[in-house]
Image (cartoon, rainbow, N blue to C red; front, side):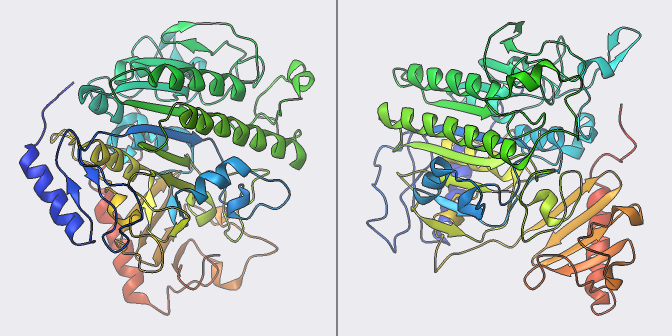
Amino acid sequence: MSKTRISRRKFLGHAVATAAAFGLSYLPGNSLAYEGPRSEPGNSPRSKKGHPPNILFILADDLGWADLSVYGRSDYSTPNIDRLAKQGVRLTQAYSNSSVCTPTRIAFFTGRYQQRLPVGLQEPLPYRKQLEVNGQLTKLGLPPEHPTIASLLRDGGYQTVLIGKWHAGYLPAFSPLKSGFNEFFGIFSGGVDYFTHKDNNGEDDLWEDETPIEKTGYITDLITERAVGFLQRASHARQPFYASVHYTAPHWPWEGPGDEETSRHLKNLFHLDGGSPQIYANIVTSLDSGIGKLLRQLERSGLSENTLVIFASDNGGERFSDIWPFIGSKGGVYEGSNRVPAIVRWPKYLPSNRVSQQVAITFDWTATLLAAAGLAPDPAYPLDGIDLLPYLATAGAKEQTQPRTLFWRIGGQHAVRDGDLKYIKLARLDQVVTLGGLPATLRGTEFLFDLSKDVREQANLNDARPDDFTRLRQSWDSWNTTVLPESTLT
């Protein structure tokens, strides 16, 4: 693992210049620290020592855009995550790097487009048994030598732990411990039964570091229990911590905390005949309850003030998710496929109860965490994301935002968002997402939408704005030459 860093003077110089443009101050010291917007001097306490923040990164699995009450869900409530939003900044234009599990996680771990690595082309990475060839596992996973958010923070003095879902490669070649995490508790695969902790092939998949273990309990509760325990221990440690808590909820199988009997008769995790809106509500409210316990533990330990908490989903939702007002779902490139809830709280330096219109994507969290910790990426692996903190600090009526150009590619589907314009190319006509019939304007496989007027992606502007259509299509083609081709899956 390379530990090379750019000079601190150069890094801070760039940071100061960026912050100055938005009325912020960076404080040199042991870490990079935000003073808060100068226009609101009472917004947050000032730190004169620049102590690095603790980091709690919470990732939900397949949580749809409107699956939280703070984002519009009305048939159940998520009071703990709603409270987190009131205490911090809620993003309304946050995206996932992919609309399935593994690619998004690779983008987050590396801070780069997932298509730069073969494992990032897996959509998603199959279960362990499906990767066996003649009894041997194929070498497909996150390379241990590649810098990750965990390895960079670890080398910068952080205690690092992953609790929950890894889904970036299997032992013996790949594991969280081989990619920068000091500790790991959770699952290697893309999904397990909530009670038996078995994968889709019926193989046990619950681990302590790199040792398989057996433990009784609902997986959401086990993840919460382990994370609370870590936060308790971390409150007595001198070094800052980075805890990545990757829940499996609300990913299928459709099992709430009271559905253990369903689990006993389940033969395949991916069952489309089970579940119900009520069971899905139970899964999500259990997730919300667990997150509430994490936040209360931070408060009890006196860690809330200088802990950067980020909550997001790895992609859009599917069967029982609420994605209104968007269309699309997991596995696609429409807004409902990749637009996700995202909330950031850092009481010491960010405002509270604000909504941000800043366009963001998963690998921006990687750049943001490094910037908050005062650490630089490995120059041999430049980040594709940006530090969001200067923009989140201005969230509100006078928000400063950074225009973005973002690219997606999955299953032969292509998309680029450039400002408010979005280009989509589908591999087949049957990939067109329809609700109650196919509008005449959507009878094709290439589209141009203006999201500032048409978030439901219904009005195809290909003919009305041919220059923009050609520009975005060419932009996607140019980006595609910088990453691995779609056929490189070895």
